[in-house]
Amino acid sequence: MNRKTNHDFVVLATHRVMIRGLTDNKMTTKLSKAERTRQFIIETTAGIFNTKGYAGTSLNDLTDATGLTKGSIYGNFENKEEVALAAFDYNLSKVKGRIQQHLDQANTYSQKLLVYSDVYRTFFRIPFIQGGCPILNTAVEADDTNNLLKDRAAKALQQWKKGIIDLIKAGVASGEFKEDVEPERIALSMIALIEGGIMIAQATNMPTSLDKVLKTVELLIEQLKK
Image 1 (cartoon, rainbow, N blue to C red):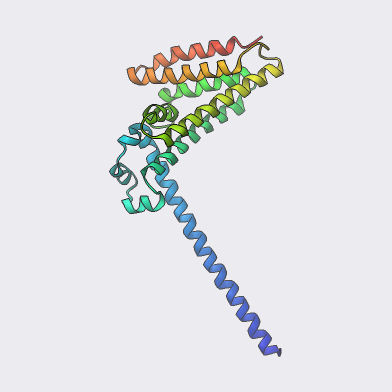
Image 2: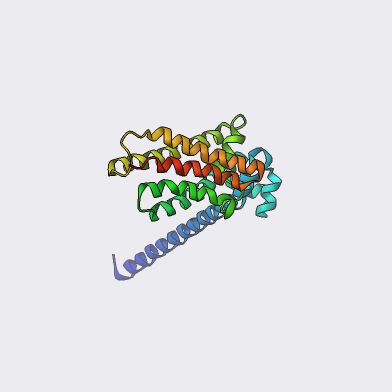
């Protein structure tokens, strides 16, 4: 291969690499834009689903909130149910994020358990999720109407229960809590009190009802100590 031919070969190969790189960048940009649009839809409609419920949220609600067409929404999601599931996951992630932030700052296991009481109290004082607790809202509405949403809420409850049980067991192991405590019973009682208190407060529009229930949660945690 002479020098000119070799030069032409290198130029051609370089050109092909550049074209391939440009094509890859365009594909990446397109995918990134699609993901951004999908996330925008989720974040914009999450509060609507959590407030109005799956059955009460119409396609018009979604298009009005996002400013997108029906085609744009269903170009990113298969149907309304898929949007609702993604919205639930988004709302739940906000709750988990707030809880984890406070857990990281707590020094003792009793303080960590009290985080649940403190965080859920803020649903009425400083609402950080439109519509209230997504687990309660979804579980109540989807009980007999949507199995996928019901399963998603059930999974969230199981994860919540496990998180509390793990903290109680760790507290026992560290010597902070009594050895004869029943982690699962305490975990279920805490969740039932918190969610029941939220339901009563929402139904009666009396946040003080939740405060009274949460005092019982705090008493349960106090009784765990040696």
